[in-house]
Length: 195
Image (cartoon, rainbow, N blue to C red; front, top):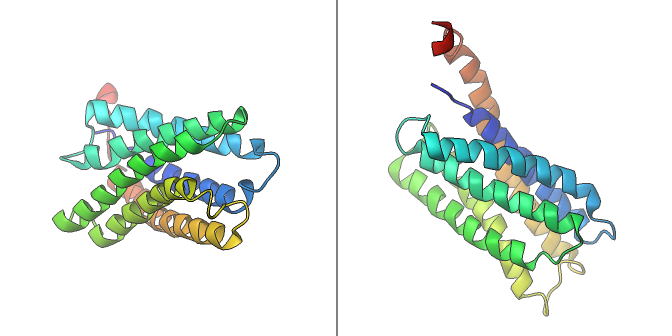
């Protein structure tokens, strides 16, 4: 069995922290290129692992849908953000994509809690919901741009960053606990190529 869910969880954690930093400080920065590498790294790992999981189903049951497909959406979103920041493009279309990817995360979070999936369904569900709200809020901020600008509203940027950091903390808790558990549970695993 191939299980790289730990990598995906920590990638999500790191990406959300990079995004929180961008929301709080990068939106108002003249030079946005310092955030390109963080978004690109997160996007690459998200798309690569998510596509593999979505196409090969290495996990039992619906966990492949639960973790693989959102990773593709998350990774694609981050690659798009990296490309837009590198080229000094407007981020409105990235924010529109973030809304729909965020809505998927909210739906998955509610379903995780409803079905009792994962070892900690309420915590994991809350991680999905908060991550999704972060994406949905990006689009809402674009809609409200004429009324309230992220550039001028430090309060709005702080709230957005805190929502993203709360989601990152949940994924960090789950991800680092998974690393701890996986080291033990896979300690006797022998891949088919060595059997």
